[in-house]
Amino acid sequence: MLAFTFPGQGSQRPGMGRAWVAHPSWEVVGEASEVAGRDIGRLLLDADLAELTLTANAQLATLVASLVVLDAVERLGLVPAACAGHSLGEYSALVASGCIALEEAIGLVAERGQAMHEAADGQPGAMAAVLGADDDAVDAACRRAEGDVWLANFNAPGQVVIAGAPEAVAAAGDLARELGARKVMPLPVEGAFHTPLMASARPRLRKALAATTFFDPDVPVVANVDARAHSRAAEWPGLLSAQLCSPVRWRQSLETLGARGVTCVAELGPGGVLTGLARRSLTGATAVAVAKPEDLEALVEAAAGTGTWHAYAAAHQGEMLYSAERVVVAPQAGEFHPVATFGVPGPEALAPVAGGGAGGASPRTGAAGAPVLAVGDLVGHVGTVEARTPFGGALVAFLAHDGERVSEGQPLAWLRVATEGDA
Image (tube, rainbow, N blue to C red):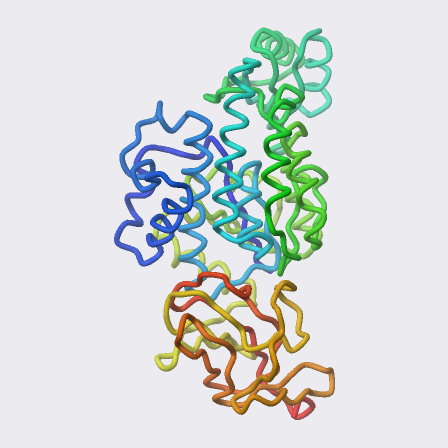
């Protein structure tokens, strides 16, 4: 089983978008820039470290860099069994799962970044990574510091992050060394993220969340706040609001993915920190970082090793084939509008329309109730172009929302090859 994970603030670096400029997925940057009303391409190509360290810039640049990689991976036809993101990366994970649209994520992260920047200006803070000590020892160091300092990230066994008022973080770091920590490293951030010192950012974020449309995710997303897998749209506004002032339970989130049967973890976005954490936390699992186009081949090889994605792309009609499953993909870029939902699982916000199938009648249904499409049946439209299935099969789920802007080659609908029981 394959899981997608997404990095958070701190993974950004100068020039992190340069490797993707010639790749078709770079078009995501133009779309994001239009939504955000600023030149995100310049941030990804030309901004220096000082500019990228500013919270409002770091969050937007990291999100968009991750979404470029996600788009490239989706063009391969790879679909995860679950998603998770570290702090800011949770927004990328929600896009990957279909819980929020790309445009909504850009707006949310722009508001989140600005709100956190203002909170940090009003309440200066610091963060530091503590290596080589167990969680209880670091927690004890924070309590003994007698100041505003808390555990902010549970990253891996023997690796946590503390955050709070600068003097309290320094004191807790010294105490952690006395209790056996091997190293304490200050982090280049503006504030004490994931602590009560971010409380002033919550009203602005809550307002933005209230204006956002959430969908039930197509695959579960493991939340930072409780390290549990969530599959209901209604849960996410509260989870994202709580995340601002709550520790990131990343080690526990990886354990949740492992307990759900995940055997391959792909980190999509700049850096590779989460890949190292996955290798430390999930014994026996494969972890792959995809930060540049040449990493895509390694991901395909790793995913094929799970036994799930022995895939290749056919040369006609945008077809992608799997051993017993087939995916209808977009014939061009544009807005996708399905002909009907047919009652199958997937994006629940899709509005059914009258008819279905090539002739407008409802499709046949198999023994298990799954609708069966014949060769040439209409799946929907991308812009003004029809998306028809070049093969027959039981319709398992839609992989794109009604009105979602898709790229050429992006999966639209998932079919399982029809069996005798489906006919």
